[in-house]
Length: 350
Image (tube, rainbow, N blue to C red; front, side, top):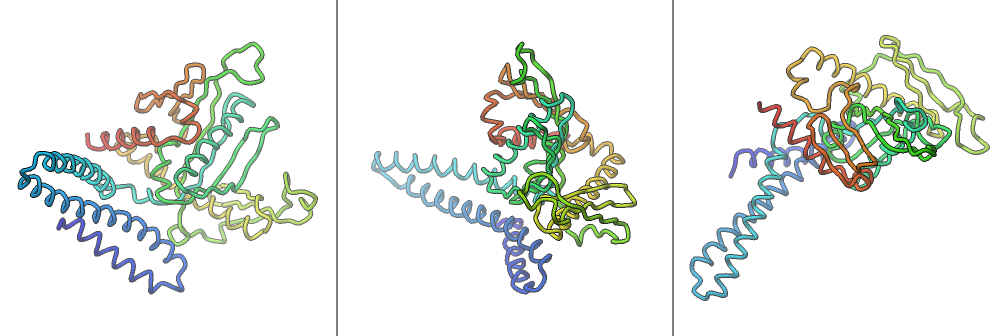
């Protein structure tokens, strides 16, 4: 048996035992559970590949010994099917065991902000959030809006959300940067094409034990929530604003009904932003590595254009174009993600 396969199976057994003994350690359970699910999926692929190889050997023997032409043709067809299955499983396994960013399995904080273009940029920000929400829905992820600032026409000046599930950062990390849209706004009577932008930031969540924040570095203010909420809104101070004094970073949360929930979510955003700030500094000092990245660096980088009149989406980093924009905006991002992953892997090997 392949030594890598043996190691994966051995580690899966080890993690299973550790989970059984970590009943009173929530943070450890969370970390081990994430590793367990990754290992289990890989182990299942290994098992399927081993079974397919065994079926191939058996079918090859049968095909070689068969004298009846009809049965021989059936065996040959089965061999072709099994060979295709083996090729697909091998490719999937190679992708899972290849070196990855250790943060790929993390959940993320997604931030989308309207850029240039007035109300139209806010509408585009809303379109992008819907696209990522639909993508998350297809993947079985959980999306929670942490903070939102709407425009009068139904768009977003800013929206911040948590996305939790399997391999979220690995799937979304190439989305960070400036997205540009070219289309005729609904309010434009003369049919002129407008160009607007929105900025997307993807930050992997950081566990509390991985990034400890000194409580003395924080100023926490409590205030009354505004916006939606019916007649009880603004009566009780539940909204939380946290200022990280050393960096000057400010985070506010008011979407939840209870103060402690808003505080937890604000801290989650703050940890992600501080970790991202540290990562940006690391990338800035590692020029060669940053050049090998596809769209996980500068958030000011213009990465993609959505041209509605020509039904065309162009990713400027890899100079590739896709059509059928409505389908992509409905969350079908897999083809784009695969192309970006492939380009990223190729730049790192050159």
